[in-house]
Image (tube, rainbow, N blue to C red; front, side):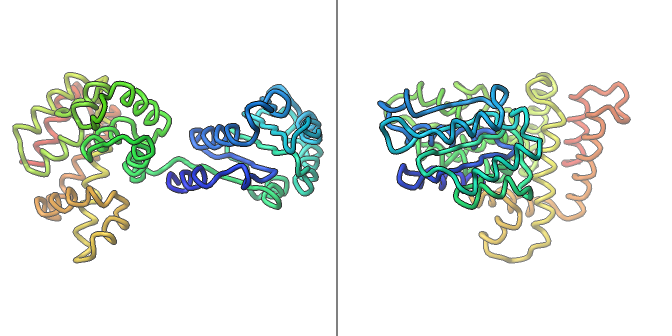
Length: 339
């Protein structure tokens, strides 16, 4: 999804704009970014005061939107009518209003660019929604998978001419997850503080994002892979002492995702790395980490470790936890891996 979104943005030019766009889905970052791109290129700056209308769903009806859409531009070839938060249009759920939208979408004015930006997914099986694809475009932007996050970060850095190390990508991915807006905001903050020619490494991430390069779930994952008990217990102690910033449940999920894929890797045999990365749903660069863990842990050891992770997850939610502190659960978890 992230790559598809970037392709749409790259290829969008004033000459390629369609008269209709319906943008919806579960990831507002993509919707807002494409809407902003359309705002940037659709109407020349000197015409915006006369031929650009940005409306909000809570303030208009379908009839209001279509009244704007049916106007002709003032001394120009095109006008832009954009509706933000279109899901809040009061009468959008009414059949008559949907019929009006469908009727317009099937025969839109060539001189109007109508863009509806929804903050909620729309049912693409509905006739009025499908009608936007007749002479326009429908884009359903879904949240990216966790496995897509490293590529998203790397691509965003390339576009911003930011050099970033794989370790820094990994730290950002773990800390921010599949939240492209948060990733974009942090990279903007980092870029402002970078010196000329300076790249982004783990030290920069620690300094400006606040993610420890030593005490994070990837370092714990590495310590468990290397069976480095001293390092693993040191990280666990740090996590237990800083539970607010390192919630047990989130770290257990991250470890479970990693080691369950290591378990799957055991059964995939001798395949090309590209195939292994695709099947596991991981960035090819990090495949070596999974291979090292697969060499370090036998199948029985992995099954025992995954069982321990499931118990730790339940205890983090209060199931059979008793009076155990998070630090205690971490220690027992590490004993299960390395004992």
